Structure formats: structure tokens, C-alpha cells
Length: 400
Image (cartoon, rainbow, N blue to C red; front, side, top):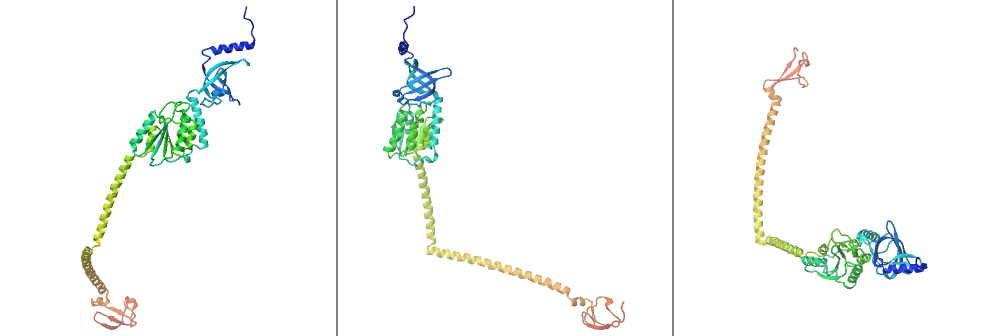
């Protein structure tokens, strides 16, 4: 014979007591995707966790919600830790949640891109909002863990490069649920109470995405953006990028690179100043020598000697010019004489009288016209014959 029948409420109550005493169901962690998320006015949160084949109802009390650091969003895959309990009135069980964490870097990447897009839209990454670094800072604040390798690297690099700047180490948590607020409060406090700070370096050494997550929190990004002091973000390694890197005025690949970026090299500055000093001294010596030479030129004795030398030089030059001009004139005269003689010979060769003197004669008519052809003559015509020694009259008696 079976057990005595029991009422529904008794059954649910019994199941509840069994679940509470189960070592596994009393402290279980479940991976699933959030769905049907509802934030009640009481502060409690109701939702379901689902996977490819099933789902389970979940309840997150308002008192536990205050301790949850990651945002609760529809579709997010989380690891929910708590215990299984039965809601006796409804006759169903649920996972009562004590703690929530994001499952894996994939979900963190989703959160990263979502916040990045939001802040970029608000202008927190805009180039026009970036502040320049001072050329010669006198005091730098380092916001990081006081026990990590990052702070030692930053201090060592700055001191090796610059023996003038002072360093303020502002210790904060750089990992865990409280780290983001700790970092943000430190940046705000430095702006309000450390007015002598010229640059803030904030960051940490390398790690996983979860370990670096504090620098991806919105509270840190907004504190960096609100800072009146220029901020250098130096988180992780060269391949690591955080929201702080985009919001900061400058992003350094590593904490060491941030230290290099923050301060000038005083050794190089001193060397440059020494070179400038030497160049200036050489320039002054050259300028003094030039002015000494000019002063020497103004000395009356030196000036007189210079004038005498100049006169002698100009006299010599004038003599050379006169001699050259004389030679030139002689050559011109000789050339002119030769040309005159040539022209005279040409004129003599063309003189009619010279031709007549060689035995030729010229016959002209009564009007003095030269007769060059026989058909110009007529019988009985009187003509004049001119020879080299005189003239004679004649009458034409025949024409051939």
C-alpha cells in the first residue's frame, strides 16, 4: 500500500526542503543567455536563462543586485551563481541568484564595442577635445597599483630620462569589481586637490581582457574626459586597447612608453644647450673680428696708406689704358691710310683722263654728247676729238 495522500502545498514544501539540503543545488552556477529580462519596481530582477535546448527561471533580489558590477542586458551570456528553490504557491522552481559574471571574452567584447560606440557618439573620443602635453612638466601623477611592475617601469624610465620632474604615485586597485571606481575617484581627486600636477599617467601591466576590464568601465572613461589635466592611458601591451585609451588625451602602448612620452630628455637638452653655447661663442668671436677689421679700416694712417695704394693702382691702370688707346689709334690710322690708298688707286683706274693718256680718245658732237657708236655720226657733221694731251675739231666725211 502506498503512502498516505498529501496535499499539493505539502508536496511543494517537501520538494523545497529537499532542494535546500542538496549539496549541488544549494550552490550551483549556471551558464545561459538572458531572456525576458524585467526590472521590477521593488528592485528585484526577474529573467530566464536559456541555452539551445532548455531554460530556467531566475530571480535576483534587490539586495544582491547592488553587488553586481556587470550590466544586465537582454541576450547577454552570463554565469549565474546561486541556489535552486521552489515557489510553493506557483509550484515551479527557480534559480535564486547571489552573483553574476559575464561569460568569456566574447561577451566582454560585445560590451566593449557597445560602450565604445556610445561614448564616441557623445564626442568623448573627438580629437578637438584632446589636451596637449606640457613640454616641460614639473610634476607627474601615476595612477596605478603601487605593487605592480607598471609603476616601477614608469618611475625608472622617467628618472633615467629626466632628473627634474617629480613623481606622485597615487595607488589604486587596477583589477576587480571595485577597481573602476577607485581609478575614477583618483583622477577626480587629483584634479581637485593636486593643482601642481601637470600630467596624469593611468594604467597597468598586461593581462587578460577580464583583468584589464576596469579601464573599459564608463565611470573611468568619463573621469578621464572630465580631467583638466592631460591624461596618458597606458594599459597592458601594445596590442591591448581599452576605452581609456580612446578617451585619454594620449594613448601609450605600454607604461614604459607613457613615461617616455611624458617627459623630455634632460640629457639631450643639456647637450643641445652646450652645442648652442659653443655655436654662440664662435659666432661672437667671428663678429668681434669683423668689427675689429672695420675699426682698423677707419684708422687715419691705415686709411692714408690705403688711399696711396689705391692711387698708385689707379695710376698704373690709367697708364695701361692710355698705352692701349695709343696703340689702338696707331692701328686705326695705319688701317685708314691703307684704305685711302686703295680707294685712290680705284679712283685713278676709273679716271677718263687716265684712260685717254694711255692712247684712247673721246668723240663728242656739237652738244657735247659722247659718240660711242658709228651710226650716231652723219656726213658733214662737226665733232670734237679729245685726247690725253688736248682736243681737235673734225668734219665727218664718211661713215662706215
